Image 1 (cartoon, rainbow, N blue to C red):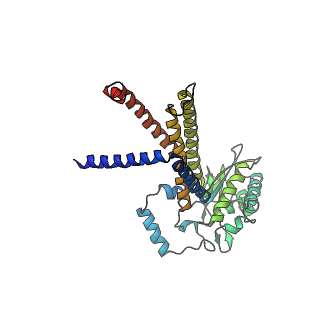
Image 2 (cartoon, helix red, strand yellow; image 1 turned 135 degrees about the vertical axis):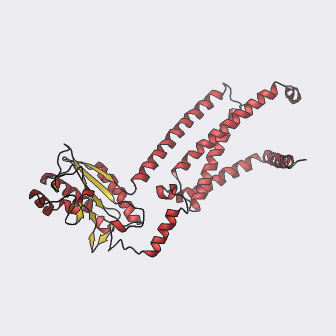
Image 3 (cartoon, helix red, strand yellow; image 1 turned 30 degrees about the vertical axis):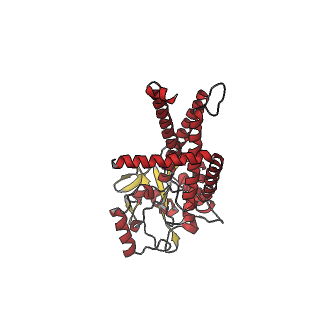
Length: 348
């Protein structure tokens, strides 16, 4: 007898004995299985999710990650008091706010600058989390001041110099202002007009409060309305949020499709007279119930151990149910095949 035959016989004998055991004590085993999975499901109270694209989609132990680890050991960067946007080691992105006039005309005018200043004050002072934690509490600083790249462009002195035709472009007062001006136009090295202005608010990285502030920033700035300007925003979480929303949307439609399909299949396979023993559709319903309990218990157990939930895993229950449906259809097809041959007589 070959290895495969011995393995198959051993597995068959094990499940045969297990089937006999279950048939002798059906109710205790059924109650035990349901209660066990429900108790394990309590672990969902500790469920935490991971949505960072860097963590989920960057190869583990990649050369870039190793080089960044070496840079952390060699260079000590002080983001709280000595921040420099050009010397960052961590993958981060400042909170970007871009302004454009609704008429798409030149934005270098006092009325638009006053509107940008009002929005800037709103971001700094009115957006807060926890116990009134504002931007000034979690900003990256240089020499005691919050670093907001491009803030010099909305100062009164800049507008005065602009009116006197003294703003050189692209470099003004030893700063490259082209990084914060969109579709800028100059003549003889002097700035004349631009359609967009961009401000960058730098936050402390790897800070939970900064992440909360970004979320609040997104919520409030999404609803913010300006009569003069169109506003576009971007944060370090923008890509993660968009990716998560796309995956969550797929899970929603997949779950809805499977729900409709299972409901229809249950109704279509149920006869006029319900017979709990002869009704084969009960096997499918039991498979779905077992899947739900298994997912509940496994998610609860992994959450209790500290593993984080990834949005893509949300599609697994429906893939398992789909696979059970394929197995059930295969079993029904095999049964019909044997009923048409010699096995039919033997079964009788």
